[in-house]
Image (cartoon, rainbow, N blue to C red; front, side, top):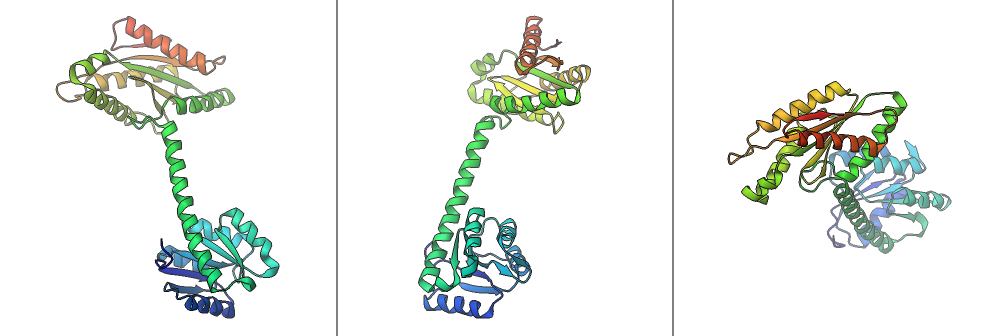
Length: 302
């Protein structure tokens, strides 16, 4: 944003003299942005909910709010709008705290002129844009660190975190916790015969089918390659086997396109009092291995 591209400035200020002074400063600097002035925080929040605004100039002491909560309430209501806090000489410490809490800058009313104000607004807008961009990048990296890039479900790293939390919950409350591990049968042949694009399609389709067939709080994970985990809180051994059979049939009779049908082998186990993360997952792996040994496209439970 250039210095001349600011369109609307919201001034929340209950002192008519200070409001007039701000208006005159901006006019003297030939700031062409539309200045909207309100006297109460509630009016400012209402305006932001209904209108587009580039920046807010905020007096910290208003008829309906005073001190640091004035800024934090405004930031909660409009987190993407840059805020410059206006303070009196005696309230300068509030300005420092406001910046620590999310304001882009603070200005002491008695020390500012038009040039300082215009420059502060420009840099406040630019800093806010950078802050939002950095947050979006950080959120993307955090998501990529926990989500499987191909299927869009949790990856092994995220599963490890969630598993530990569910194990602690099961120990604390004595609740049931079951685990299903399944592996697509002869998946290498899918890639060899149909190509890796079809193989990727199958993996994504499997993730979608299973996601739509489990409860919202069940945890589906791509464990690696063509292996998947389903962690099932508050589910005992017999119900976990029933779910595994449901999933086995779902995959066996699904048309993946081009005449391709895929089966899977399943290993099921239930949490035991002496289990830790490794023993729990290893036992599901052992059950899965047994299912493969016994002919594939079947369920074994340990």
